[in-house]
Length: 381
Image 1: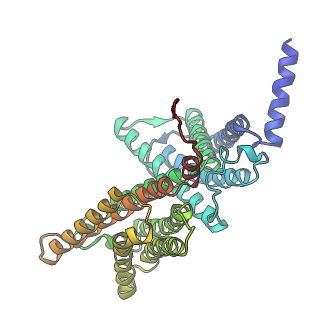
Image 2: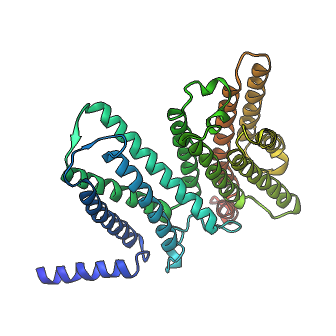
Image 3: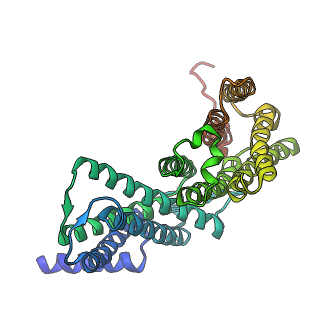
């Protein structure tokens, strides 16, 4: 009996390796196998690198640095592998459940989209592990980690990162895509703020974070470039399910999609052209983001006739708040950093909410279900 169970388990593992995306169970097992592989590799590399010395928890040459860099590599590789397997799901009935949440008519991921999302996951893993190690360093002051437990902890960090990143790629949906955008923007911006060489950068403007030649400036500009690429992905998926049955609907959908893509392109250009080197271009693309957002919000009821009125009012409120803080800046009450932070938070939160709202208001399956619902006839009629 024991031998039979062992043979079945072995065969099951072999099936997972041969066809990891056959079903939900195989996908979860594949994620565990990938995590285990990174645990072994990370543990062996850590053991070789740490042998004979005690490590600090955070800082240069620390366990936190190893977990951050190794986690970034693991996140990138696991995400690419997850998308590769998700795009080759053999069972059509499981495509919506396994990795095909992004396979909707009118939108698909290109290789550069996958590269941008993989880099976003890598940056989140890098900054996340560095932040955790910094907190632990403050909690265990002057503590060190010996080689064997350091190698084990480093392996666990890589394994957990690879497991989460693989499943994020394989089970990616538009809503998860918006969550990745939000988390990436937050961790990237805060990392740049905390590591800025000038502690009073905020007295100038938000773009001052990208003006210097230090690591924080490069991280800030890279964050904007990758976030801009992700916004273009969100733009395609946010408008993919909108109704296009009539020429006005199709034209309105295309205009909204174009406006959102322009916001993403302008955001990437803000990072490509730092304000200290390309002042005119930088300010032009930054202003273009706000203009595109205002045009989309004001024209949304005409562009998309099925959008809920509540969401339209929310957009009007957002635009009004941006105008108010701009007036405060013009009168000297606010500095430019405050205006940029408020406007940025409102614009990107609106885009994330729009992704969900557009999916709900333009879901063809929901509409078909309502149309196909039979009439209820009461007895005696």
